[in-house]
Length: 293
Image 1 (cartoon, rainbow, N blue to C red):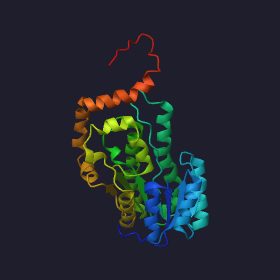
Image 2 (image 1 turned 30 degrees about the vertical axis):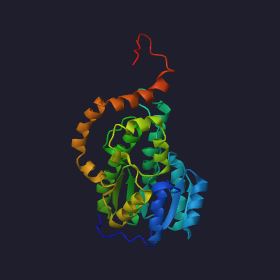
Image 3 (image 1 turned 60 degrees about the horizontal axis):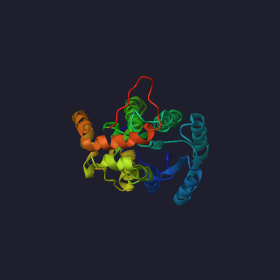
Image 4 (image 1 turned 180 degrees about the vertical axis):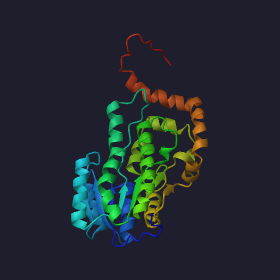
């Protein structure tokens, strides 16, 4: 693997979820460094607006990353219009409604994995030949949920743990080709996704069981800059805020805190709240006795 700095001037960068949030902020920062951008987003109109703000030959494409064929067609379009792909930032993701494994809608579980896991794979697979040919770099946007307890957000945590492994494998597999890959681990960033999640009464109840600093959102620019610098440095890991890096290193120790959450009465209240609306409308299986409280 090339360990030299990756000069992004004139390089083509493909960003999924590029119309807003972390994806858009990263795109702006790389464009300011001279990169040429392709913004892929399920909201085509928002992608067009974001591309217009960046100017130049920025390309905007409406793409649902869970549709592998559509992503492959978009990659072909990017290569034809911009001449190739040097850097891929697999950032698109969605959040599930807060629910436990007992109460989660299987369709919602599958939808999160379709976007957050399979969407990343659908993005990486068709772009890899181009990244290899140009000795470029791939960024997989995971999350601190890749190693933190995912209670009431398990589909999201599962997807982020899975894409972390994809990124780590890519790091090794791309090295013989002179290309590279890295994984971004972020805590809570002030994006639409986090605002929607934090608007939930259930999430609010769960946050009361956790230290305030742990769930306090940070500005999106800190994540965008971490990725932009990570691309230039071919970094294996990009993190924000400050607690994420040591937490990742100490993930084995942190796993021992699962028992603390399992005993926390505030977390119990949040779990009951998450399950109450769904399970109240569901008849128990034959022979199963239900108990109040």
